[in-house]
Image 1 (tube, rainbow, N blue to C red):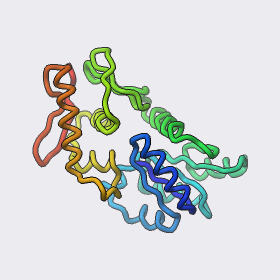
Image 2: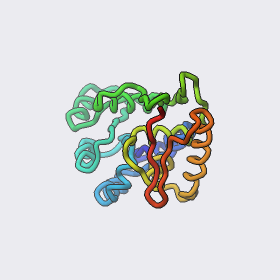
Image 3: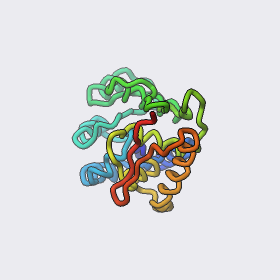
Image 4: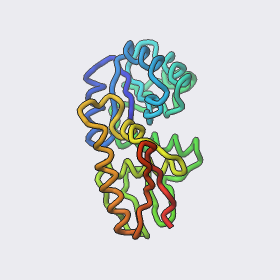
Length: 224
């Protein structure tokens, strides 16, 4: 889930709509709402945030510190006019990147991916046995061939790969894929997506690589 902070509702709703068209969950806050939320939200919910986008806010330099006290997710500031002094102040405050609006959400996703790779020394993909999963929006490859997946299934697979070796709950997957504020989607939809994903992987591999335990969640096993 991406979090957008801006004083103008037209900006937050506009970016949320564009992220949604890319199959990425997001939510927008005005500055006052965000300050209250980021200091009181549960750690589990905050862990679902993939990145923060900081738009037009009064006293923008205070927000990076507030975010860093609770989260290590990438933080990108968006400027509407070129200003070297403003850019340097934002970097000094702790943002990971500063971009000029307008900017396409695909570029934002690419920049967030680059920040994560720099931090974690990861490549743009991960290999689990015969499966290669990309983190830039491309479909995964299985045994060297592209495995086309709907956006939700692809995002769930990416989440499982990023958490390989750990068991994750249905709620954790839902929060990451749909966001913690989406009340229009039932959490059980995750089970349907995972069921379809497992069938496709089983058809290609001959076995089910997603280990599930009732009430405990899911774990991706090595695809040997």
